[in-house]
Image (cartoon, rainbow, N blue to C red; front, side, top):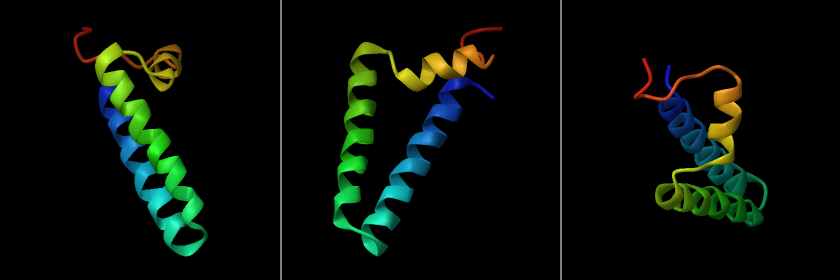
Length: 66
């Protein structure tokens, strides 16, 4: 798997998780949804995300790497 695929999976999982928690626990979990969305937005412009750095250190490759 590539970093990009894992990162998209993490983002989707955390968004769905925070929506479920907002529904069943507290609406304050929507702030976590907003945090994930803002992180995705900034990474679209900067091409950097903290999770990407961690995944690289774990040995995952970027999609352009062979």
